[in-house]
Amino acid sequence: MVSTFSMGMDHECLAAKPALLLWMIEVTLDRTITVTGIIDSGCQVVIIRRDVWEKLGTPMKHKQVMYMESANGQANTTMGTIPSICFSVGEVSLYCSVQVVRNAPLECLLSLPFMSLVSTKCQEFPDGSAHLLFTNPNTGASIMVTTHAKKSPRPCYSPCSHQEDF
Image 1: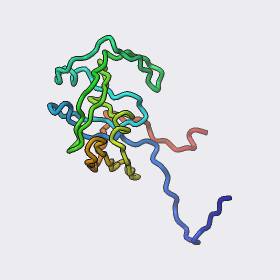
Image 2: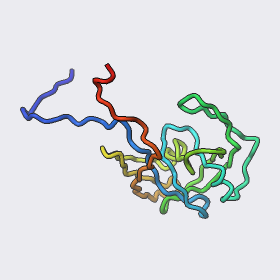
Image 3: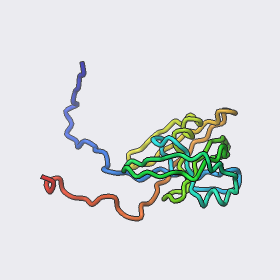
Image 4: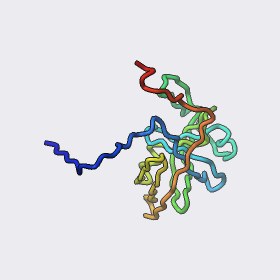
């Protein structure tokens, strides 16, 4: 049974925004280059773009490719796997396996394997920002990171009144 009550105050209900910008943080790879990582706990693999891999100079296993399908049904094959890259955010450093992709609108995708390994705790805010608490599983050291928004090069929707739809 669910019970509700009203305090007798007239007020507007808040509603979710139709879209929010992606969360980004700065991450250092193999203690050499710093890139912008997009947070996406809904993705199954950690990804870096080809030019980032080239700057790292880390060997890649070209025979360990992955077939990837995106939400819109497009399918691509990765270039290969890097078995272990050190990801550092402040004092939290850990190692993840990475897939390298030829082209992507991002330098690095920090996905579920990364988010799970650092036992991410997240506090989201109505403006679309978030505070992420990362904990190093090896040392117990933690860091609170504030995300910043990825600016979209073009709007993702055009505002309209709901009456136009019906």
